[in-house]
Image (cartoon, rainbow over all chains, first blue to last red; front, side, top):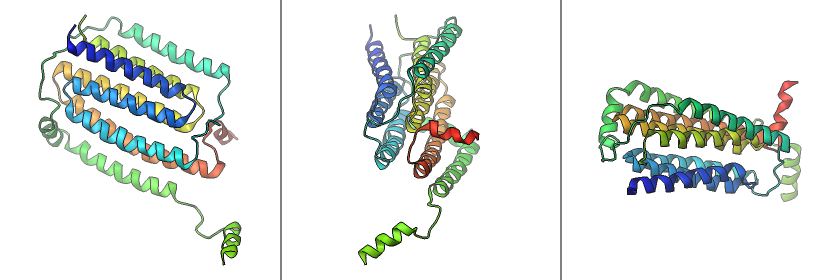
Amino acid sequence: MEIYDILFWILSALAVSCALGVILSRNPVNSVMFLIVTFFAISGHYILMNAQFLAIVNIIVYAGAIMVLFLFVIMLMNLNADVEPQKGQLVQLAGVISGGVLFLVILAAIKTAKTESMDKTSTDIGLITNLGRTLFTRYVLPFEISSVLFLSAMIGAVVIGKKEEAKPSKEDESEMKQFL
Amino acid sequence: MPVNSTHYLFLSLLLFSIGIMGALMRRNAIIIFMCIELMLNAVNLLLVAFSKIYGDADAQLFVFFIMVVAAAEVAVGLAIIVMMYRKVHSVDINILNRLKH
């Protein structure tokens, strides 16, 4: 068994067990922590497959930015107490069964797929030079469009998240009178 | 048995199914959102694996664009969840069924 295979199995076991932890843990903060570990395991897979740039971007964007945003929202709403209402046993069972049936169907579909062997030698496809050249020659238009997408998402988030009435309500005024 | 493309197909399928199960099982809107992120990452993993197998850089750029869209989606989605929390003081998705009436 090569070192590549050993690392593959270790990272896969870590990713799958932590993904199960995400959906099974009752506390949302624990779910976020498990998801961060899953992202790190997937980044390990990227490094194993010579996609170094994507591994770093995965850690920076997902584990660094998106999960911190999730954690921030959870802390803001004070959801870290285990008071979340659960679905009924029947609905949970139905969810697991439908997920499992989807798993089995796709498993049966890809069971006969042609097996391609992995080339374990290191390549320079995933390096930033090669990716940047491809991005700015063949994929310039999607790159520019994604900047427009970001701009509209930013404006949308600000508009949605803004408080609706600017004037203070009755309670705020009475609180302010107490201070005065 | 050395690692080949089938191993990555199975791993990616397993992560995707776990994401589906989580989205169907939980009632907390934030957890459902995190399960969607998990599914996106399962797809990313498979794209990188095939990029490695076929020696093609295009798949890695698709992963890059998926990450871009996911980041934008999270910004808007969390804003919607915060607004919902401000209105009904809960992130329970069962409360949202009043949209039916």
